[in-house]
Image (cartoon, rainbow, N blue to C red; front, side, top):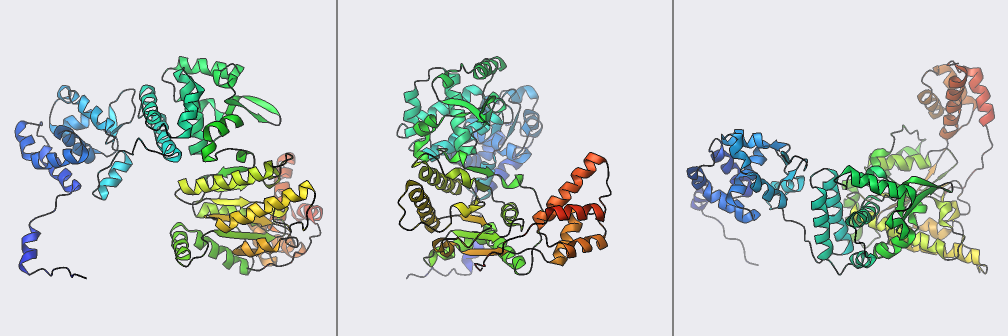
Length: 559
């Protein structure tokens, strides 16, 4: 292997005087030279080496390069024409003649208008600033040769820009149309073309519904989400009236429908029909039945809650939390991959009701900044033969897509999973037993190839299939709190309770945290109904007697 040439002592001295030109030092030089320059010919000539460098790098004119540099200096947030005039030392009339240059920088995505209605203020987008920090030129994303996921990433950004008033309705329509025309190979594009939507409002609304489902996991669309895409209130009012009465073209075509709750159709909530999802988004496995069996909750929407654990549970939960911290999770995942191990984290939380299994999963998601995909286990099993298998496959397909798109892998939570991780039926002959075995086999296969984080909770483990037990990497038996922990729970949930009363209740009733929470809720309801805020020991003792239930002891699976 050839060695790098060793420098002589003279060479470094010569090189110290020659600073390598970078984007940031070129911007710095231009800012210094442009201040109060009035963009005179002399100033432009003095800046020429740097303006030519930036103009070539960004694909803009030299004057546009100067304006961009000033925006970096005055911003990068909330820059206006007054800032430019003040910096250059010119009057406002002169600076308005540079409007076309600002428009060109916006089209190049080096600037963006804060509000297209007046085009007076602009920002430098965060991706541009981030690229400059690494001495890189922000390049516009490829507009052609995309797959369906890449296409929807750009569609999502365009709708975000419209929502932020960075582009107007006309620009949104033009950009979406350009994207669609440039990617005829994508099935979604072909299927949208086959719909034959000639009205631009109908076409835009259809694109919005697809964007919200794919990019936002949102299949419950309200009028407020539709309003932003319309430039004129009258256009939106017309569309809203048709949707309310069910006479809208997209409803007549069977593409969108009302959201139903408890069998009643809501006149103000809408979603794509199952047929539209299969036809338009089938290649992405998005929303095909999965929306009935899972709900994605954002990490920031999870409520902080103080948790109380006993003995070994403290260490086990803390260890798991540390493993799921973003940096540590990626490090461990890479090491496991290097050693040929499976990279998925599969966890079983088991123990009696009210011991904190489900809430622990929520708090782990909140603490590590991960969204949580909560599976409605009873809804997985369908009365229609074959649909249950489709449901579970669609569920895992959707989870894989979330892992691929999100910065932090979300948690997949199977809450009260007894019904799907029980012992498989040997020699199954009837359709129901075969279906349940098929479901379990699919889940076992998915656990083998999981690239993410799965948590299952269960109250009963005596019926846990051994194949599932082997596939759970971490198993935590959530024990009931002891007397000292129960006393802390009582005091935390009822701060007005005296230490002595809390000690009496903790010693007298072997309750879980969930049971203590039930009692404190009853006490709160009593105070609201009767105006009695005391809730003395006598009242609480009565509530405790009503709450007391015998609990089945569960076998230990182990950590």
